[in-house]
Length: 348
Image 1: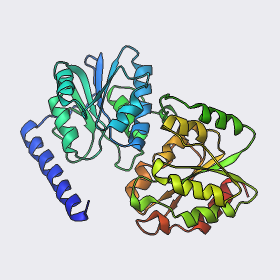
Image 2 (image 1 turned 90 degrees about the vertical axis):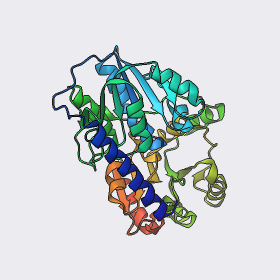
Image 3 (image 1 turned 90 degrees about the horizontal axis):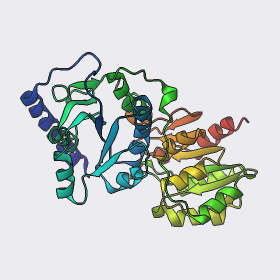
Image 4 (image 1 turned 180 degrees about the vertical axis):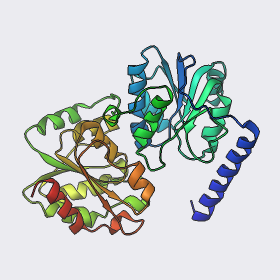
């Protein structure tokens, strides 16, 4: 999408939200929610990283309110598959696919509480917030949510997303402590090849490198990955990648004798099991930063210059180094810079 189109869409979202604010004019509730709490519906964001950072809230809701029925609405098939086996969710819904079935299920229900996890105006999320019937509706505070929701999570925009999601607990009169908010990956099928590989790593401490990224600006170059692994000939590495980088992964494994060839993973749970066996992970700003948080694995994160990415999606509850590019492009972080930081984390 061009910058012109992106700005046009942003103006439309803001205009749509502003119109609803003038129509609805909901007064903001200042005291914690004390109404019925038998059911809650949560609007989950579309990307894997956002999905991972929602899991602490799901876990805490079940722990703090064991009888609550948690309904999660997903807006992509990928996040639907991610949450399918989450034991904290009672019912999972997807806006994609059979639209008639989705609306038939949702419009025949009335929930006690709805929570929109977006911290900026989204037309689809605001529409669902209005269409879905709930006694009270909550969102995250931003200029375009005031007047639309009964309750707003009042945290700084740059607060880490896992903490921002768990801010719903404060609306329910419960404390939010960082240590309570470690994310997790719901269990998914694991292939025999992955199980065998994980077992083989038990006596081989290695460094993980994730070569995939969520967008064109976030990729680090193959040349840089080669420089990094060759700078530590005494260390063993393993490469993690999405299917789109399969060939690059194979080349790195062929050209670097200290890279352990690894089987392809079929889901994030398999990836999480492998990451949990590493001593450290080097990755661009992607969901893999948060996969490492699930297992408490130290991270070197490679970030672009955008401040909101560095703050809202920073490594969470793990030892970490954040390397910031002088530009919007992660590839402008030098290999030498990463080598220095890796030496520091390895204790050299």
